[in-house]
Length: 329
Image (tube, rainbow, N blue to C red; front, side):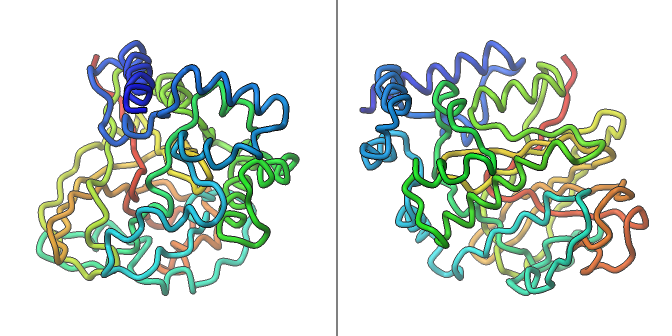
């Protein structure tokens, strides 16, 4: 099994090196490459084509390192035993420009500030950090050949649930509904170049298409500081080229790894030291300076006051999130 996983990761590394102008992919991204061997992919492809995959679900999920049924959500969430349960995932942060809808402030009462002003992050100051964890941080991508056969749309949502053994009204059911909502509606967001990518190859292709072959990926180091009122250390501006907008990729809750990637105008990036109780976290902060097209009922405006286009809005890049920026070739 180790050899098979190694072969799969080598295939991902080769794809990366063929398309990206830096020698090695980020370690966390390489770790998400599918562990399935080429033989296993062929076997599961045939099972999927014959609608027989659900009867082989336990072995498929174990070998592919993906989450099936609600039981899988307990895996690897016990490392930070001092933290409360992972905050209820919500897709509000991704829907900047959709039709206005009521957003309950209860989302913010889970702890920390999900949105804040740039002026609130100064060295020596304090800021309450929200939950930075990914609800299913351990899951892997599926190989492109398998992932491309699994449409993420409302038209196929019952098929999705049946395929992965998802129980109605379970946590996973809610996650699938919210991810499908984002991926099905992405084409209706005006002025935003966005895509839901379902394989490591698709992620690389999106980045290359939008930014070119020479890129750098920025991500928050760990989840330390979640639910804490941390002391702010060094704040360093790491990207301010407003004429070359970065691509933000948010990890979505789904049985296998899915990212919602979008290119947003007028974003600056900062690397911020968060002095948490256990150790320092090096976090990435994204600040949006053009909020003119954002939903007037967006949670950020409810928390900070003002409205679209009147203020900049900043947020942390959560676990498994990444911001891609163009670099000099």
